[in-house]
Figure 1 (cartoon, rainbow, N blue to C red):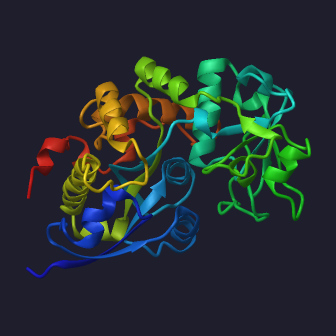
Figure 2 (spheres, one colour; figure 1 turned 120 degrees about the vertical axis):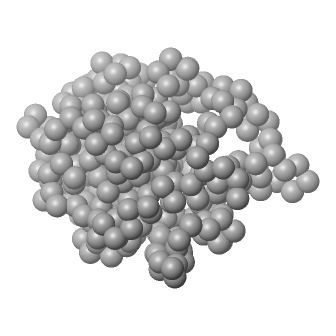
Length: 336
């Protein structure tokens, strides 16, 4: 049987390079791989449904599958993940010194339902008693003034107060000007990167805070998963497992390369020490695919989504993913 032509779209992560380059084949497929940043691929996926296999925001997926007609199904290939604590910036004037100080304050973010915001709001509620309804929201671009809301049909839940940033204003500037009190975003605000004295992280020692959080909860928030368009899935029921197997091997290869001392694969001087420390804390497979090793995270995120009025109902983790992937385990990938 001739290989099935398949287009895959993700950002350019190390863990996908094996599949992207063709060194790790997806069995039964002739893959064409494109890398696009989520800021480009997500709106195109939601509006045009143009990709066969694509990186997807987990929060938007839970929202769209529960409330709208989204013709994609996810598989538990964890494309991207990051802890929440590192992603909150505040002014340095002392108005917000502790997480609890955010009660009654205004948080700036691209939109209410994006995954980083979901996890920040959820972590603040679980860890510090700051409910999503305790804050107000301002939606806009962090460093560039633009309308980031690509799901305009989603209305803010009851009890949530939010509005768009004024035309031409960035969230970074509004924070410095005292018009909002905090920002959460997918990357460091430019003002922070440039060392502006007026902005700081809410958790300066976020690494140790996040380590303690993970040791206690085993929650490491998942930002993005891999989605398959339903018409493709209906034709090729074997595809989810073959994709998981291929990306698992691609990920394993990427992690092994992090140990290369003769030519560091990432521009960090103590990269190998970081990898060894991470494995000592989180285990050899510290970036696991599949449902079971990610259950504490999925339980938390599905709860957060419903509690915050994003999902129309409380998802069970298994219901998020294609049924044939429920029993998948990393050992199934083997070595090719």
